Length: 405
Image 1 (cartoon, rainbow, N blue to C red):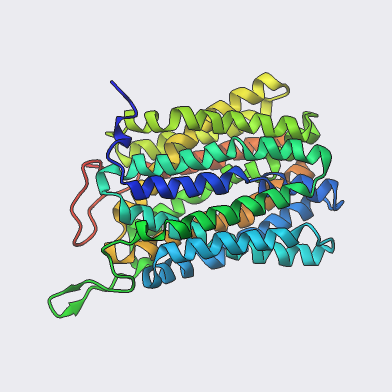
Image 2 (image 1 turned 180 degrees about the vertical axis):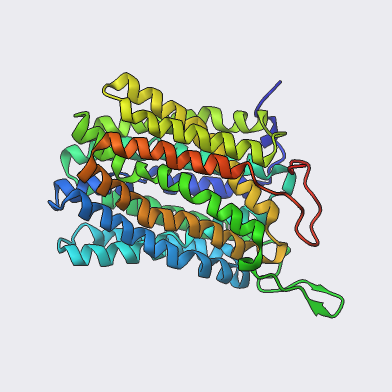
Protein backbone atom coordinates (compact mmCIF):
# COMPACT_ATOMS: atom_id res chain seq x y z
CA UNK A 1 0.00 0.00 0.00
CA UNK A 2 1.25 3.47 -0.87
CA UNK A 3 1.11 5.46 2.35
CA UNK A 4 1.40 8.74 0.40
CA UNK A 5 -1.83 8.04 -1.46
CA UNK A 6 -3.85 10.47 0.68
CA UNK A 7 -2.01 13.42 -0.88
CA UNK A 8 -3.32 12.67 -4.37
CA UNK A 9 -6.65 14.42 -3.87
CA UNK A 10 -5.28 17.55 -2.24
CA UNK A 11 -6.15 20.68 -4.29
CA UNK A 12 -3.50 22.52 -6.34
CA UNK A 13 -4.00 25.64 -4.23
CA UNK A 14 -2.90 23.67 -1.15
CA UNK A 15 0.33 22.66 -2.92
CA UNK A 16 0.98 26.29 -3.87
CA UNK A 17 0.36 27.38 -0.30
CA UNK A 18 2.79 24.73 0.93
CA UNK A 19 5.38 25.92 -1.62
CA UNK A 20 5.25 29.46 -0.22
CA UNK A 21 5.58 28.06 3.29
CA UNK A 22 8.60 26.03 2.21
CA UNK A 23 10.31 29.12 0.76
CA UNK A 24 9.67 31.10 3.93
CA UNK A 25 10.71 28.36 6.33
CA UNK A 26 13.94 27.65 4.46
CA UNK A 27 15.15 30.93 5.93
CA UNK A 28 14.00 30.25 9.49
CA UNK A 29 17.19 31.12 11.33
CA UNK A 30 16.56 34.00 13.71
CA UNK A 31 14.03 32.43 16.08
CA UNK A 32 15.90 29.12 16.67
CA UNK A 33 19.12 31.00 17.50
CA UNK A 34 17.62 34.09 19.14
CA UNK A 35 18.28 33.01 22.74
CA UNK A 36 21.90 32.14 21.89
CA UNK A 37 22.32 35.40 19.92
CA UNK A 38 21.05 37.46 22.84
CA UNK A 39 23.24 35.77 25.45
CA UNK A 40 26.38 35.52 23.31
CA UNK A 41 26.31 38.71 21.19
CA UNK A 42 24.14 41.08 23.22
CA UNK A 43 25.45 39.65 26.54
CA UNK A 44 22.10 39.39 28.31
CA UNK A 45 21.23 36.76 30.93
CA UNK A 46 19.23 33.60 30.21
CA UNK A 47 16.24 35.15 31.98
CA UNK A 48 16.44 38.30 29.85
CA UNK A 49 16.68 36.19 26.70
CA UNK A 50 13.55 34.39 27.83
CA UNK A 51 11.87 37.77 28.37
CA UNK A 52 12.59 38.75 24.75
CA UNK A 53 10.86 35.56 23.61
CA UNK A 54 8.01 36.43 25.96
CA UNK A 55 7.56 39.75 24.14
CA UNK A 56 7.45 37.81 20.87
CA UNK A 57 4.74 35.61 22.34
CA UNK A 58 2.77 38.59 23.66
CA UNK A 59 2.78 40.16 20.21
CA UNK A 60 1.47 36.93 18.74
CA UNK A 61 -1.08 36.58 21.54
CA UNK A 62 -2.52 40.02 20.81
CA UNK A 63 -2.50 39.46 17.06
CA UNK A 64 -4.07 36.02 16.66
CA UNK A 65 -7.77 36.55 17.53
CA UNK A 66 -8.00 39.89 15.72
CA UNK A 67 -6.29 38.61 12.59
CA UNK A 68 -8.72 35.69 12.50
CA UNK A 69 -11.67 38.09 12.46
CA UNK A 70 -10.05 40.31 9.84
CA UNK A 71 -9.35 37.26 7.68
CA UNK A 72 -13.05 36.41 7.74
CA UNK A 73 -13.75 39.91 6.37
CA UNK A 74 -11.06 40.67 3.78
CA UNK A 75 -9.69 37.23 2.97
CA UNK A 76 -6.80 35.20 4.34
CA UNK A 77 -4.46 35.51 1.38
CA UNK A 78 -4.13 39.31 1.63
CA UNK A 79 -3.09 39.05 5.26
CA UNK A 80 -0.54 36.33 4.49
CA UNK A 81 1.05 38.33 1.66
CA UNK A 82 1.33 41.46 3.81
CA UNK A 83 2.70 39.53 6.77
CA UNK A 84 5.50 37.91 4.77
CA UNK A 85 6.68 41.10 3.08
CA UNK A 86 6.59 43.32 6.17
CA UNK A 87 8.16 40.76 8.50
CA UNK A 88 11.09 40.52 6.07
CA UNK A 89 11.51 44.29 6.18
CA UNK A 90 11.47 44.33 10.00
CA UNK A 91 14.14 41.61 10.18
CA UNK A 92 16.45 43.67 7.99
CA UNK A 93 16.55 46.31 10.72
CA UNK A 94 16.47 43.97 13.72
CA UNK A 95 20.17 43.11 13.79
CA UNK A 96 21.14 46.81 14.01
CA UNK A 97 19.34 47.24 17.35
CA UNK A 98 21.58 46.90 20.41
CA UNK A 99 19.64 48.54 23.26
CA UNK A 100 17.76 45.91 25.29
CA UNK A 101 14.57 47.95 25.57
CA UNK A 102 14.60 48.56 21.80
CA UNK A 103 15.22 44.84 21.25
CA UNK A 104 12.06 44.11 23.25
CA UNK A 105 10.11 46.66 21.18
CA UNK A 106 11.47 45.40 17.85
CA UNK A 107 10.71 41.81 18.85
CA UNK A 108 7.12 42.77 19.69
CA UNK A 109 6.64 44.55 16.34
CA UNK A 110 8.17 41.64 14.43
CA UNK A 111 5.88 39.21 16.23
CA UNK A 112 2.69 41.17 15.52
CA UNK A 113 3.51 41.22 11.82
CA UNK A 114 5.04 37.76 11.47
CA UNK A 115 2.45 35.85 13.49
CA UNK A 116 -0.45 37.37 11.54
CA UNK A 117 0.41 34.73 8.93
CA UNK A 118 -0.50 31.70 11.03
CA UNK A 119 -4.26 31.99 11.79
CA UNK A 120 -4.87 33.20 8.23
CA UNK A 121 -2.93 30.22 6.90
CA UNK A 122 -4.81 27.68 9.04
CA UNK A 123 -8.14 29.24 8.09
CA UNK A 124 -7.31 29.14 4.39
CA UNK A 125 -6.31 25.47 4.56
CA UNK A 126 -9.62 24.64 6.21
CA UNK A 127 -11.47 26.53 3.49
CA UNK A 128 -9.70 25.13 0.41
CA UNK A 129 -9.44 21.49 1.55
CA UNK A 130 -12.45 19.15 2.02
CA UNK A 131 -12.99 17.77 5.57
CA UNK A 132 -11.88 14.22 4.76
CA UNK A 133 -8.48 15.47 3.54
CA UNK A 134 -7.74 18.02 6.25
CA UNK A 135 -5.50 15.85 8.41
CA UNK A 136 -3.27 14.93 5.43
CA UNK A 137 -3.41 18.58 4.29
CA UNK A 138 -2.24 19.85 7.67
CA UNK A 139 0.48 17.19 7.54
CA UNK A 140 1.51 18.49 4.10
CA UNK A 141 1.66 22.01 5.51
CA UNK A 142 3.86 20.79 8.36
CA UNK A 143 5.95 18.86 5.85
CA UNK A 144 6.67 22.12 4.04
CA UNK A 145 7.44 23.84 7.36
CA UNK A 146 9.83 21.16 8.49
CA UNK A 147 11.47 20.63 5.13
CA UNK A 148 12.38 24.31 5.31
CA UNK A 149 13.34 23.96 8.97
CA UNK A 150 15.69 21.10 8.08
CA UNK A 151 17.62 23.61 5.97
CA UNK A 152 17.26 26.92 7.83
CA UNK A 153 18.83 26.14 11.23
CA UNK A 154 21.62 24.08 9.64
CA UNK A 155 22.54 26.88 7.22
CA UNK A 156 22.07 29.39 10.03
CA UNK A 157 24.52 27.49 12.21
CA UNK A 158 27.09 27.69 9.42
CA UNK A 159 26.46 31.40 8.72
CA UNK A 160 26.94 32.16 12.41
CA UNK A 161 30.53 30.92 12.16
CA UNK A 162 31.28 33.84 9.83
CA UNK A 163 28.92 36.51 11.17
CA UNK A 164 25.96 36.14 13.53
CA UNK A 165 24.07 38.98 11.85
CA UNK A 166 23.85 37.21 8.47
CA UNK A 167 21.01 35.01 9.73
CA UNK A 168 18.78 38.11 9.96
CA UNK A 169 19.40 39.00 6.32
CA UNK A 170 18.86 35.44 5.07
CA UNK A 171 15.64 35.09 7.09
CA UNK A 172 14.36 38.43 5.78
CA UNK A 173 15.14 37.58 2.15
CA UNK A 174 13.26 34.27 2.14
CA UNK A 175 10.25 35.87 3.83
CA UNK A 176 10.02 38.56 1.16
CA UNK A 177 10.47 36.03 -1.66
CA UNK A 178 7.66 33.88 -0.18
CA UNK A 179 5.40 36.94 -0.08
CA UNK A 180 6.15 37.75 -3.72
CA UNK A 181 5.39 34.14 -4.67
CA UNK A 182 1.96 34.31 -3.01
CA UNK A 183 1.20 37.60 -4.74
CA UNK A 184 2.10 36.05 -8.12
CA UNK A 185 -0.27 33.12 -7.44
CA UNK A 186 -3.00 35.21 -5.78
CA UNK A 187 -5.73 34.25 -8.25
CA UNK A 188 -5.37 30.55 -7.37
CA UNK A 189 -6.54 31.20 -3.81
CA UNK A 190 -9.86 32.89 -4.64
CA UNK A 191 -12.59 30.79 -3.02
CA UNK A 192 -16.34 30.65 -3.36
CA UNK A 193 -16.75 32.00 0.14
CA UNK A 194 -17.32 35.76 0.26
CA UNK A 195 -15.20 37.34 3.03
CA UNK A 196 -17.33 38.84 5.73
CA UNK A 197 -20.56 37.21 4.61
CA UNK A 198 -22.48 35.61 7.47
CA UNK A 199 -24.62 32.61 6.60
CA UNK A 200 -28.29 32.99 7.32
CA UNK A 201 -30.93 30.49 8.30
CA UNK A 202 -34.31 31.74 7.19
CA UNK A 203 -34.39 35.44 8.05
CA UNK A 204 -32.14 35.15 11.10
CA UNK A 205 -28.36 35.28 11.19
CA UNK A 206 -26.63 32.47 13.02
CA UNK A 207 -24.36 34.03 15.60
CA UNK A 208 -21.57 31.98 17.21
CA UNK A 209 -19.84 33.19 20.35
CA UNK A 210 -16.57 31.24 20.77
CA UNK A 211 -16.17 31.93 24.50
CA UNK A 212 -19.53 30.19 25.10
CA UNK A 213 -18.49 27.07 23.22
CA UNK A 214 -17.63 24.72 26.11
CA UNK A 215 -16.08 22.12 23.85
CA UNK A 216 -13.80 24.76 22.35
CA UNK A 217 -12.77 26.07 25.77
CA UNK A 218 -12.02 22.59 27.10
CA UNK A 219 -9.87 21.81 24.06
CA UNK A 220 -7.94 25.09 24.30
CA UNK A 221 -7.25 24.53 28.01
CA UNK A 222 -6.14 20.97 27.26
CA UNK A 223 -3.63 22.28 24.73
CA UNK A 224 -1.95 24.67 27.17
CA UNK A 225 0.29 22.31 29.20
CA UNK A 226 1.81 20.35 26.32
CA UNK A 227 2.37 23.43 24.15
CA UNK A 228 4.22 25.10 27.03
CA UNK A 229 6.45 22.01 27.14
CA UNK A 230 6.96 21.97 23.38
CA UNK A 231 8.06 25.60 23.27
CA UNK A 232 11.06 24.77 25.43
CA UNK A 233 12.55 24.07 22.01
CA UNK A 234 12.84 27.83 21.50
CA UNK A 235 15.08 28.67 24.45
CA UNK A 236 15.67 26.00 27.10
CA UNK A 237 16.77 23.24 24.71
CA UNK A 238 19.37 25.30 22.81
CA UNK A 239 20.74 26.62 26.12
CA UNK A 240 20.76 23.08 27.56
CA UNK A 241 22.50 21.61 24.51
CA UNK A 242 25.11 24.38 24.22
CA UNK A 243 25.76 25.22 27.89
CA UNK A 244 25.11 21.94 29.75
CA UNK A 245 26.10 19.34 27.18
CA UNK A 246 28.81 21.48 25.58
CA UNK A 247 27.83 21.26 21.90
CA UNK A 248 28.40 24.11 19.42
CA UNK A 249 25.65 26.19 17.82
CA UNK A 250 26.27 24.40 14.50
CA UNK A 251 25.90 21.03 16.26
CA UNK A 252 22.63 22.19 17.81
CA UNK A 253 21.29 23.11 14.36
CA UNK A 254 22.27 19.66 13.08
CA UNK A 255 20.61 17.91 16.05
CA UNK A 256 17.36 19.77 15.49
CA UNK A 257 17.56 18.65 11.87
CA UNK A 258 16.87 15.12 13.18
CA UNK A 259 13.42 16.39 14.13
CA UNK A 260 12.74 18.02 10.79
CA UNK A 261 14.11 15.16 8.67
CA UNK A 262 11.91 12.69 10.56
CA UNK A 263 8.89 14.89 9.90
CA UNK A 264 9.74 15.16 6.20
CA UNK A 265 9.90 11.41 5.65
CA UNK A 266 7.54 10.04 8.29
CA UNK A 267 4.77 12.49 9.22
CA UNK A 268 2.55 12.20 6.14
CA UNK A 269 2.60 8.38 5.94
CA UNK A 270 2.25 8.18 9.74
CA UNK A 271 -0.87 10.35 9.72
CA UNK A 272 -2.26 8.41 6.79
CA UNK A 273 -1.73 5.19 8.74
CA UNK A 274 -3.60 6.55 11.80
CA UNK A 275 -6.28 8.40 9.83
CA UNK A 276 -9.01 6.21 11.40
CA UNK A 277 -7.87 6.98 14.93
CA UNK A 278 -10.27 9.11 16.91
CA UNK A 279 -9.17 12.64 17.76
CA UNK A 280 -9.17 11.62 21.42
CA UNK A 281 -6.77 8.74 20.86
CA UNK A 282 -4.39 10.62 18.55
CA UNK A 283 -4.16 13.71 20.75
CA UNK A 284 -3.66 11.84 24.03
CA UNK A 285 -0.95 9.58 22.59
CA UNK A 286 0.77 12.52 20.88
CA UNK A 287 0.80 14.57 24.08
CA UNK A 288 2.13 11.61 26.09
CA UNK A 289 5.03 11.07 23.68
CA UNK A 290 5.92 14.78 23.92
CA UNK A 291 5.91 14.52 27.71
CA UNK A 292 8.14 11.44 27.71
CA UNK A 293 10.54 12.88 25.12
CA UNK A 294 11.09 16.23 26.82
CA UNK A 295 11.05 14.64 30.27
CA UNK A 296 13.73 12.18 29.18
CA UNK A 297 16.25 14.99 28.94
CA UNK A 298 16.33 15.01 32.75
CA UNK A 299 18.58 11.95 32.55
CA UNK A 300 20.36 12.84 29.29
CA UNK A 301 24.12 13.33 29.56
CA UNK A 302 25.42 12.48 26.08
CA UNK A 303 24.65 12.61 22.37
CA UNK A 304 22.97 9.20 22.30
CA UNK A 305 20.45 10.05 24.99
CA UNK A 306 19.76 13.40 23.36
CA UNK A 307 19.03 11.78 19.99
CA UNK A 308 16.65 9.26 21.62
CA UNK A 309 14.67 12.00 23.36
CA UNK A 310 14.44 14.01 20.12
CA UNK A 311 13.09 10.96 18.30
CA UNK A 312 10.45 10.32 20.99
CA UNK A 313 9.08 13.86 21.18
CA UNK A 314 9.22 14.17 17.40
CA UNK A 315 6.84 11.20 17.08
CA UNK A 316 4.60 12.95 19.59
CA UNK A 317 4.77 16.15 17.57
CA UNK A 318 3.98 14.36 14.29
CA UNK A 319 0.84 12.86 15.78
CA UNK A 320 -0.29 15.72 18.00
CA UNK A 321 -0.04 18.83 15.83
CA UNK A 322 -1.84 17.68 12.65
CA UNK A 323 -4.50 16.05 14.84
CA UNK A 324 -5.04 19.18 16.93
CA UNK A 325 -5.40 21.37 13.82
CA UNK A 326 -7.78 18.83 12.24
CA UNK A 327 -9.89 18.65 15.41
CA UNK A 328 -10.05 22.42 15.59
CA UNK A 329 -11.15 22.68 11.96
CA UNK A 330 -13.80 20.00 12.54
CA UNK A 331 -15.44 21.89 15.42
CA UNK A 332 -15.22 25.35 13.81
CA UNK A 333 -18.43 26.89 12.38
CA UNK A 334 -17.95 27.44 8.64
CA UNK A 335 -18.60 31.18 8.80
CA UNK A 336 -16.18 31.64 11.71
CA UNK A 337 -13.17 29.65 10.51
CA UNK A 338 -10.78 32.57 10.82
CA UNK A 339 -12.00 33.56 14.26
CA UNK A 340 -11.84 30.01 15.65
CA UNK A 341 -8.41 29.45 14.15
CA UNK A 342 -7.41 32.77 15.72
CA UNK A 343 -8.38 31.42 19.15
CA UNK A 344 -6.48 28.22 18.40
CA UNK A 345 -3.38 30.17 17.41
CA UNK A 346 -3.85 32.38 20.47
CA UNK A 347 -3.12 29.37 22.71
CA UNK A 348 0.15 28.79 20.89
CA UNK A 349 0.95 32.49 21.24
CA UNK A 350 0.18 32.46 24.96
CA UNK A 351 2.42 29.44 25.46
CA UNK A 352 5.17 31.05 23.40
CA UNK A 353 4.86 34.19 25.52
CA UNK A 354 5.35 32.41 28.82
CA UNK A 355 6.75 28.95 28.05
CA UNK A 356 10.29 29.91 26.93
CA UNK A 357 10.56 32.55 29.67
CA UNK A 358 9.38 30.10 32.35
CA UNK A 359 11.74 27.42 31.04
CA UNK A 360 14.77 29.71 31.06
CA UNK A 361 14.01 30.92 34.59
CA UNK A 362 13.68 27.35 35.90
CA UNK A 363 16.81 26.36 33.96
CA UNK A 364 18.80 29.30 35.38
CA UNK A 365 17.73 28.92 39.02
CA UNK A 366 16.97 25.21 39.48
CA UNK A 367 18.85 23.42 36.72
CA UNK A 368 18.05 21.12 33.82
CA UNK A 369 16.91 18.11 35.88
CA UNK A 370 14.10 20.04 37.56
CA UNK A 371 13.10 21.65 34.25
CA UNK A 372 12.77 18.42 32.28
CA UNK A 373 11.17 16.49 35.15
CA UNK A 374 8.56 19.23 35.34
CA UNK A 375 8.09 19.04 31.57
CA UNK A 376 7.16 15.36 31.89
CA UNK A 377 4.52 16.09 34.55
CA UNK A 378 3.04 19.09 32.72
CA UNK A 379 2.88 17.29 29.37
CA UNK A 380 1.21 14.32 31.05
CA UNK A 381 -1.61 16.61 32.23
CA UNK A 382 -2.50 17.40 28.60
CA UNK A 383 -2.41 13.69 27.71
CA UNK A 384 -4.96 12.95 30.45
CA UNK A 385 -7.18 15.90 29.54
CA UNK A 386 -7.30 14.89 25.88
CA UNK A 387 -9.03 11.67 26.92
CA UNK A 388 -12.04 13.81 27.88
CA UNK A 389 -12.57 15.38 24.43
CA UNK A 390 -16.07 15.39 23.00
CA UNK A 391 -16.84 15.36 19.29
CA UNK A 392 -20.45 16.25 18.72
CA UNK A 393 -20.89 18.02 15.35
CA UNK A 394 -21.23 21.81 15.32
CA UNK A 395 -24.75 23.06 14.61
CA UNK A 396 -25.30 22.99 10.89
CA UNK A 397 -22.29 20.76 10.32
CA UNK A 398 -22.36 17.06 9.53
CA UNK A 399 -20.32 14.69 11.64
CA UNK A 400 -17.04 13.69 10.05
CA UNK A 401 -15.93 10.10 9.51
CA UNK A 402 -13.03 10.53 11.93
CA UNK A 403 -15.11 11.92 14.81
CA UNK A 404 -14.95 10.37 18.27
CA UNK A 405 -18.00 8.18 18.65
